[in-house]
Length: 231
Image (cartoon, rainbow, N blue to C red):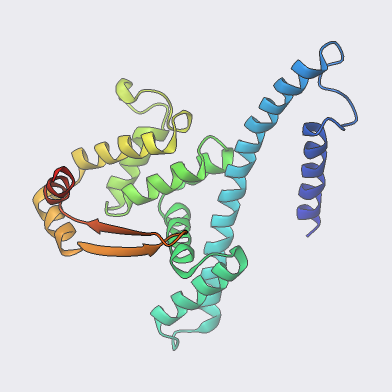
C-alpha cells in the first residue's frame, strides 16, 4: 500500500506538470514550446510505465490464481476453480467474465511460457497490445515453437536481418500481422490440419450496440467470408 501511495503521489506531480502548475516550468525562455516538449516526454514515459504496470498485473493475477487453486485443494473441480478465479479478478479489475478469462489466459502465457515477452513488457519496450499479440500467436505452438517466435522478434542477436524495426516500435496490429506470418511459415502442423480445426470452430456472434443497432459477425473459412463480402 505504501508503494501504491508513492505511485499516486508521483502521478499527481506529473499531472501538475501537464497542467502547467508544476514547481518549475519546462522552459523559462519559451514556456509554451517547453510545455509541448515536456508533454511528449511525459507521454513517452507514461507508455513505459503503463507497460510495466501491465506486467505487474499479469504476474499478480497468475500468482493469485496459483495460490487460490492451492488453497482450494484438489477436491474442487478444475473448471469451477478457474471460473471462480476469473470472477474474482474480473471483480477487482471491473471486467466481464469473457474479458477476465482472456486477461488471465494471456497473463498465464506471459508468466509461464513467454519469458522474453514478459521481460520486454516489464522494461517498457513492448506494450500490452504487443504482449497479447505474442501470446495469441504463440498459443497453438509447442514450447520450442513459442520460444523461437519470441527469439525471432525480441532477441537482438537472432540471425535474421530482415525483421524490420523492433517489435515495440511498430503499432501492435502491425506486429500481430508480422507474428502471424512467421507463425504460419514455421508451424509444425500442416495448414490443412489447422484449417480443419478452424472450420470446426466456425460460428456466428451477435452483439448489441447503441442507438438500437447491433453487430452480427461470422467466423468462417476465408474463402466463404470473402465471397459473402464480395456479394
